[in-house]
Amino acid sequence: MKEDSQVKLRKVAGEDCPDGRTCPSVHESDCQTLVIVGSVVTDPEALAQLAIGPDEMAIQVPVSLLPEVAGA
Image 1 (cartoon, one colour):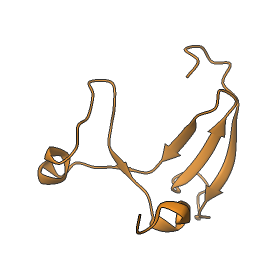
Image 2 (cartoon, helix red, strand yellow; image 1 turned 30 degrees about the horizontal axis):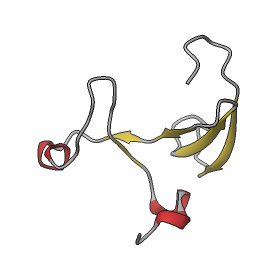
Image 3 (cartoon, helix red, strand yellow; image 1 turned 45 degrees about the vertical axis):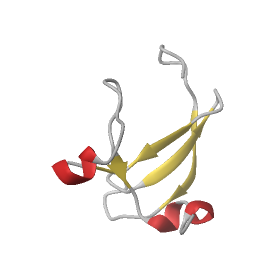
Image 4 (cartoon, one colour; image 1 turned 60 degrees about the horizontal axis):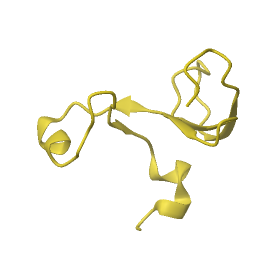
């Protein structure tokens, strides 16, 4: 992803919520990546099952945001 603030995002999936800001969502960037917004995973047992790099963070979103991967 671009390192500067020139990245353009377009919301492609998401849920509506009262404040319009704290909703899980998926955005497509202009540099061919997806940006996922969701709750940070903090459960140590769940995190132990993942190979997370030093610059990565595990998040969770409802399956309904990515139906094509549900049950995969």
